[in-house]
Length: 377
Image (cartoon, rainbow, N blue to C red; front, top):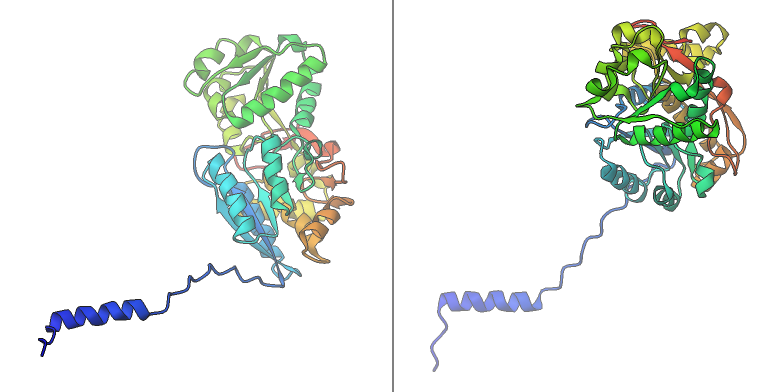
């Protein structure tokens, strides 16, 4: 008779047999997000942290204000705000994630992007409306059937400031200051093209935040027109030395806190923006526009920028287009089929025009006080 197996050997045999006979476990698929059939999901990509300018806080406040005021809207606009932390890579990643994984019905992009052919192709692949609240070129020229520009294009902004500058000085005596930021490069290209169209050669001064004051301080007192491309943080120290006789043309994207930092130079600093965020335009404004400016100021502790007004309009445009159904293609078709009166401007879109800002509402603004709204120049 053979010897019975020891207890440890018997236990090992049982475990081995069990492993051989157990059914293979099935992989659990990643659950698909459950859709609320009564909700229209909108994701806003903003820079709420990091160094990229402009900061997205004013847009966040405007978006949230619209969502709070229209909580009973049908279909319900379900707003999600994502901080892309001033990262171009994260901007692209989160845009894709929100469309593919979170199943957003529309995207609001409130950050600076280089809207080239590659970026335009990525927007097309999303197959949902993507609304841009900062200036980009006319999307339709790049086959941008899903992209909508709510801000003026860089070319429209350049034309606005150069029109004004041409009335005040010989353009050949102006200088164009640019740093290496995305917004500055975009605006420098547009301003250079606009000056060339008028047979003027741009006198470009390239600076960094470290050397801007040293390079610009000797130039400003003797230069009648200075175009500061991009958000003005790099130029603030030098710009404070501007004197009577010099006009500083700042970016559409400048934050009011930056302009306020110019202190004594503020009478000489102007920037393009929507006339409807200006205090001097409130008398001719619609009730909705006046209410927006006042409510935003009360909630945020300061007046809105033109960009904040466009962010508010982004949700209003999308909600209006989704009122008869949230199918992405149908929403896109409704967006590009007419006009919409917003608080920043009256937008007009068509299949061949996806930059909708009415340039008749584009004016030069000036700063009139630390806690007050800007005024039309």
